[in-house]
Length: 439
Ligand code: 3PG
Ligand code: MG
Image (cartoon, rainbow, N blue to C red; front, side, top):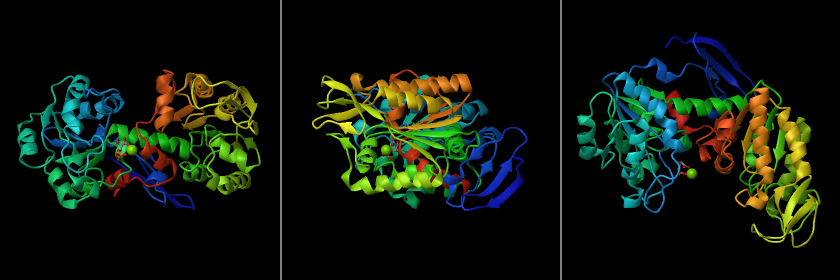
């Protein structure tokens, strides 16, 4: 890799180390890497590495949902890792995949065996993936040693050992015996400082790399948190403001507009003296909500709150419902979606934006009668992506589920595979899985 040091600076927000290649520039978010920001541009690390004849130990996040008969019900995370795996196969490398599945209690549990997903991984790679009953020791070695160039093996669930989550160094060393080079493509688990995601990198001081998915995810977050394509708008929803405080605070230094939706809006409305009926409110955060509003005003950020809501007399899809002003919700009623006036306002802001982050639904979209606000926002994102070439990132659990439900996932620029990893990135926290490769 031919990297030139171009730029080094330090401000209250960034100290930047910019590395650049002639071909393609890539950014790794300063916020994700460290509190003192290192802004790095580079080509995909994988492109300049030849895996021929090498055992590539690849940490993937194949923590996918399974049904009662252990079939994969959403293979998004498996599909997302295919590009990295195929590159190694095409080079003539030997791929050794490792992942966790679920949260076993530190010992083997049949329902969490990764053998359940072997058929799906095989299907997406177009080869028969071999399976090792253990992720370390003789059972792993037997399978790995028999791999030929271009072949793929999957190791058993890493979390069958409590040492994985403990970040045990000896266990990380045992895992490391399965590879000559370490690739981390597990963005969904990059916020965990576990043996396979962070500690293991020490055993590969020169041969440790990001996979394509990891770089794409980090790049996408960087494109919203450090964007010069303004205005930048963050749409933040979901039920609880408590889980979004750190994100809102971090965004205040990085975006021009913040649109608030979902149940969390009612804490802001009540804090300002509005009547919210039975709507969800976090009473202990009323003061914090006022602080956030003041913070936005002081920093010159446009913080938008809903002006109207679709309200219901019970928390179910068949409840009576009507529209209401956001601050005049009658007793016995609760807001379950943003209303049409809010949609018009939010749509307008979205369509004028060049960069948009969406995290958290606008209402209880799982119930069809309260899905309209979330659907309208999703459609506005699709529209601004297609018509204005805006960069639109959707991330974090429920909003990803929403764009999938509305079949709009391929109409936005990027849909993150990370839940917690995405949220922690948006908080400006350093992800151990990312840091371990860079250090
Ligand atoms: C996830 O799905 O959140 C990741 O795979 C990490 O799993 P965890 O939350 O159990 O650590
Ligand atoms: Mg999780």
